[in-house]
Image 1 (cartoon, rainbow, N blue to C red):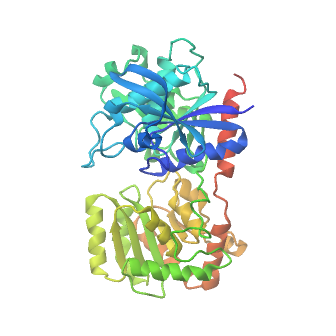
Image 2: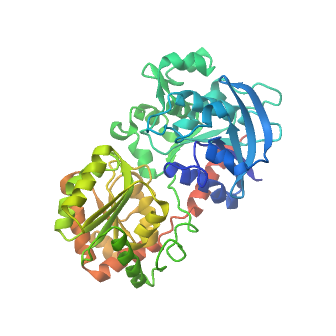
Length: 488
């Protein structure tokens, strides 16, 4: 029997993306298909999403008032898989990003936008649309957390209403929790008992993520190590007590990457395609990348960074270590945006080291592919990293990851210690604690490994031989859904 799963998320490739959440949500339907699970994805009706429908679209359901806003449920496709779109123009038809306006400020009604989104998801799961039937609901991050709270405390009660569905919530980043004031509670349309410590209440206010964590049948994160880390105060961000209380129902499943998109043997963005057996062809990509960033040629490694420029990503420490990186013979090509002070700091570092450091502020998908195909090592010095995808892309492209030992970075990169190198399984460089000295030591060790061509090729080939596609992760999610529905 094929299980039918409703996936509720605020973004999904290729329709809308601000980070790794979109990659996961977009990849899951295809990853599940071989394992007896069919997934339907529900997205908000942002302009970029509704535009994919064109003038012809099927209306499955209407709400006269969804937290005060009229809304429609539209049917579409995401790839070959079913897509549901919550078309609520008063909430989602606006210029700017999914969560912020053109100036980068949070939309002031985000609480209403994503509460309404959750209310709609709970209605759909509960049988509001007679042509749709699901076996489980899977919510992603705080933006979908209220779907599980509504299902728990105020389930759909119209004709055709079914029993509360088994549910999963995936934490893609515990740092983002959807905190709002308690004064908003009356507008949510929940019964008084929902405003409790085992409900949506959080330190006198409301947390949409906590609402989902408290209501879910199971909790997942995007790596086993992160699932353990969030039990501790440094990573749990105030919700570690809840996670510890439910630790028997918390697990980690590592994200995958799509080999049809991230494959140096067929990537159209690269000047020269290559495989693990033809690594010499990478040289053409490296020369092109040096020219693109205005970098001098050198006999040391070309480090790359593709990242948000934030404290979480350890970019402040990398900025401190930039002079050291250059001093030991490295060069740096950086693509990213974020904190204004960090953006200015990296521009200043590039000005100090012309030809050695190149900086592009912003995000460019094609450029990120070219960087992975031409860079020697990718730096991911995150203070915490639920899973991370850039290190997986680095492995696939033979761009050796240099990572802090945390979360998914610890789970996916094998440190080039002596034993791992002798066994031929090392794929990168790990370091403990995101500080100047630990990062500087890791950079120095990377340069030393690079200057041993045989050792470096071994790292590249081991990384390129690792399987971080969705095959195993898709099966793990399917098994989780089956475990929840077997007794229904």
